[in-house]
Image 1 (cartoon, helix red, strand yellow):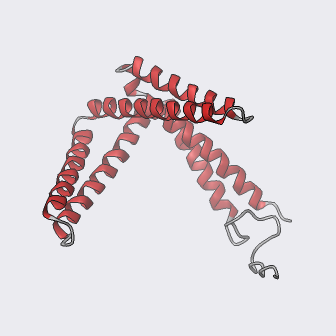
Image 2 (cartoon, helix red, strand yellow):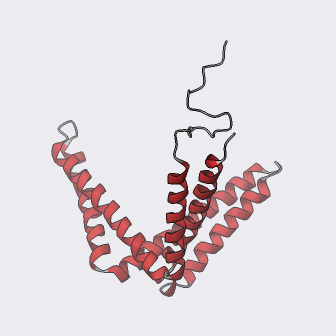
Amino acid sequence: MTDPQPHPHARSGDLPGITARTRWYWVVMMGAIMIAGGLLSLLNPFLGSLTVQAFAAAAFGIVGVMKLVDAVRDDAESTGGRVLTGLLGAVFVLFALSLLLNPLAGLLSLTFLAALLFLAIGVLQIGFGWRLRPARPWGWMVASGAVSVLLGLFILLTLPESGLVALGLLLAVDLLSSGAAYLVLGLALRRPD
């Protein structure tokens, strides 16, 4: 079997999915914008939390409207299924509206959900790591799960104060780490072979 012909614009050191035609400066700019957003969210985590809330409200609203449209238009679904789909869509739309109309309560509820998510993920990671024993990396998985559980407990135990800033700080960490990764990737694409 012969090797497939390389893409005419590919370089030997390219990363999968990234060709020489990719403009390195766009990748660097994307990383820089993410880092700037992360720094803004770090400097004002309350504003970052409100940003997360606005995106969550938009997502819930869009999904809710899609569910409502699906309930009305899906002739293949039974009447009971269409009613349940419509009710779920209405709940999503109402939740989106409540996030927008009452931002402080929305922040608290989203932060509470995030804390529960950290707890659940942490417990699952600990259980998975425990099942990996005696394989070598089991301790890392258990430690990662323990950190998630501690983070979830910390958020829960510091509510309602943490509700104002926790989501913004999580956004800041994500934007900073993602931005740094894109910055490094873009600079690596800039280097000639």
